[in-house]
Length: 424
Image (tube, rainbow, N blue to C red; front, side, top):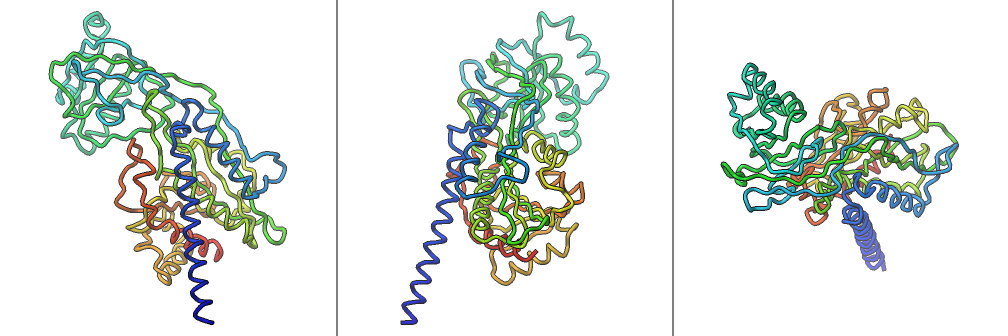
């Protein structure tokens, strides 16, 4: 009889774990779908995602925060978008967006055949040559409307200087094409250039080719986005609160066909947030548990900055904050940002993991302004930002898809986080 009971318990456990993983997959897949347009600012993809989360919060029974009658904390910000054409021709060859070329997030529009000059590395790092060249652009504009620069083999400070100092200034003067072997990554811009800037893979570039572009860029001022905020009250009334966060926005679209699914970053993190919400809705603690799905993270941590400026809970009442991102792998363990700031809590995580071997490694990292924990940490709120490590290196590109996620350590990490939160 006892053997039968143990076997039934085992079957129940397997079923529960399978159900948890299926739910995580459902959420991630939905957030990555074409219907959400990359959860960005074309076709209001972020707003569609926010409404999806509103429904999830409601289904889980999360409460509105005190003095609020909605899950939405709305704010406005400026953003550069690419809602229409995204076409680059090299002779008669049409290049593939996101694979063969990528536009700069602040790129302006272009709809023309390029009459270009090619700049050498020596030109780029000679201030004298550049000054004379740029000052002569207005005189040459009937013959020159663009330039091509080659940054292959540049590294370190030289490469940073090109991206930071050179491109923004030149893009206010004429169209720019950059030949590169760097991995393509996209982001969200909010300071539009006057002209287009695009990066092209070196193997796709043809010397002396006829180049034409059809790129539509649109700058949106005062775009409306919303953080999605819910809570599970403590067992007994208290002001003390644990905050669990993940950003739900991503990069949106680059043209009307190409979109960035953002599976690992951060549909998977939202799935983890909802898994924790599902658990704590059934198992409240001595603390209030507040769940925040942030908007605007990819646009410069805007949603979390707004929340810290206009908090729905008093920041001094936050006992601890855990921000999760990139939860779709974990084969190589997890990294904990702010571990060096909070060594006691970090050691608790390490000890919990050592007992059950949830992940191969709990890696310590110091403070970094790389996700939504940052503004809270700057205001003195004890905070961790936790992300997974693994073989999936797709990040801010079109290959960060649901199909490329392993979810290898999703359930073990969720159990580790629950035990850590319960022990705070």
